[in-house]
Image 1 (cartoon, rainbow, N blue to C red):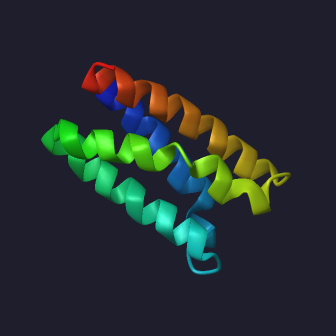
Image 2: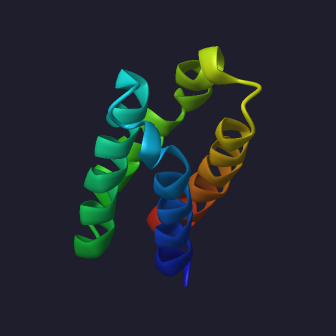
Length: 92
């Protein structure tokens, strides 16, 4: 199911960038957004999920200064898969 896959992708991203939450404002901001997304998925609030899809569309720009680090590239790949799953959930 798409919700379970989305939650798996969120967990993967959290595991990759979680250790940097207190060192990088950008990492903290993304992690807070992912926590909010998890809440939206649990309640199936499609409007909030759509908002998070829009927020995630600029994640590449946020990650630009950190490109080249393996864990960032991996997190971006999980982010792409997460975006695909979210679009399935909201029917886009």
